[in-house]
Length: 184
Image 1 (cartoon, rainbow, N blue to C red):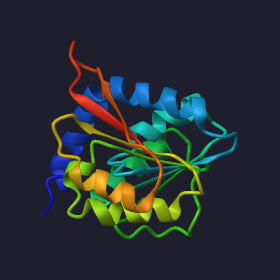
Image 2: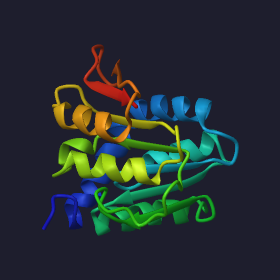
Image 3: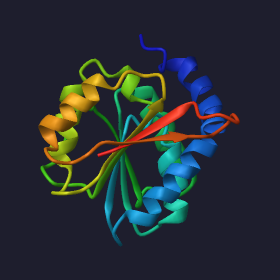
Image 4: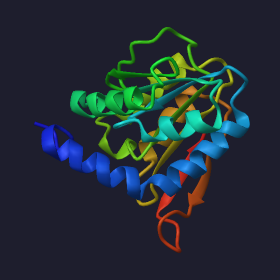
């Protein structure tokens, strides 16, 4: 049983919703600024969907999809979406980032926040993101700044040849940056 299942999932949802709010708002402002009108966004490792719930407030024109490996977290997220009457704007699916159930070129942007450190195979996740992204569409990955990105860098070079990886330190919660963002 995963930490994110059952009561632990409920506790994580309550805590993460509060603790990550500042980070999510920053990320959502960035997405809102670059996503095309009526665009499609995938949140990989969405947990209970807090980032998407924030994003839909800024850009109600976007079609938002979130995936998470935890069925319990997706169930909690679906409840949040239903409670906010946003079922027509946000879709949440149980899926592995290494085997996404979407067609090639389905998304205008893929974002993942505080999820990469859980992935068994970063290379497989990046390969799937490259597959479901439209050509030249951005991939943004945010995680704790101390998480190793060797696998991410190698996979990005293979799947997104010629595209640089831009690292940004992100200040949220504390007066010093504990998060890093990687734009590919």
